[in-house]
Image 1 (cartoon, rainbow, N blue to C red):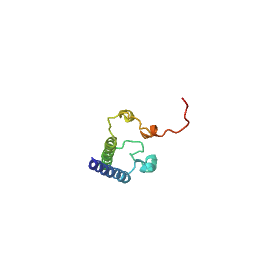
Image 2 (cartoon, rainbow, N blue to C red):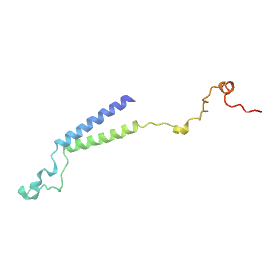
Image 3 (cartoon, helix red, strand yellow):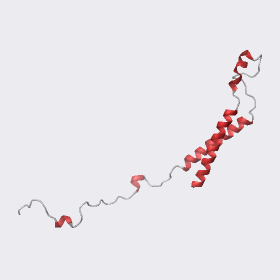
Image 4 (cartoon, one colour):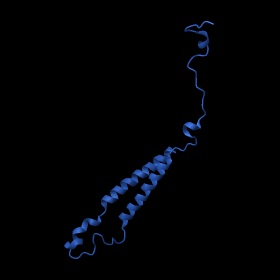
Amino acid sequence: MELLKTLIWIVNLLSAVSIIVLVLMQHGKGADMGAAFGGGGGSSGSLFGASGSSNFMSRATAFSAVVFFSTCLVLSYLSTERQSDLGVMGHSVEQPVSQVPSGAADNNKTGPVVPE
């Protein structure tokens, strides 16, 4: 079980690093914001316009995100302990142990003696 958790951790970390790298490598939508407001000479791509078809980088980022979130869910499921007992109430009640040894109370009678 620990080998499986280790492999899932490795896949989780690799997918997280790949998401970071892919996001940093992509060209942002707001990079041509000056062209969207008339600075580019009538550019058809606007800041809030249609983005067109997705390229390889955005699809790879989406795939890495799916892998990352699924491995996070699997790791959280595997790390929960499944116990069938009821905690404190699931164990039998044991009799308390006396603090005085068994023969010491009868043999060592100290204290005031009450006359009969």
